[in-house]
Length: 82
Image 1 (cartoon, rainbow, N blue to C red):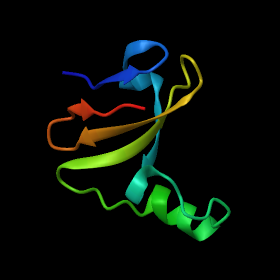
Image 2 (tube, helix red, strand yellow):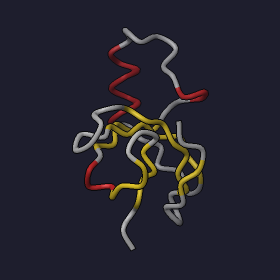
Image 3 (tube, rainbow, N blue to C red):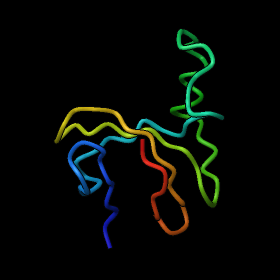
Image 4 (cartoon, helix red, strand yellow):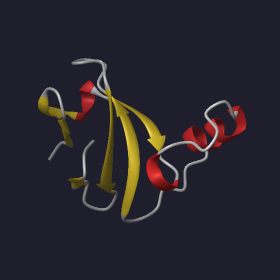
C-alpha cells in the first residue's frame, strides 16, 4: 500500500506528489534558522528512528505549501498534520 499524505489544503494525496525535507528537531522548528550546519545535519544526518518522528513535507505537485506531520516509520501511519 502506498503512503498517502493528508495535505491540509488538498486532502489525501499520494506521497509521490511531495518532497520530504527531513526530520524536524524537538518542537518542529530550527532554533537558529540561519545556522547552515544545523540545517545540513537536520536534512542529511537523519536519526531514522523506529517509531514516531516529526517530518516536514513540501507539496510540489499540488498546493506548493509545506506541512509538518508525525509519521510512524514502522507502519507509515500519519498523525498530527499541520
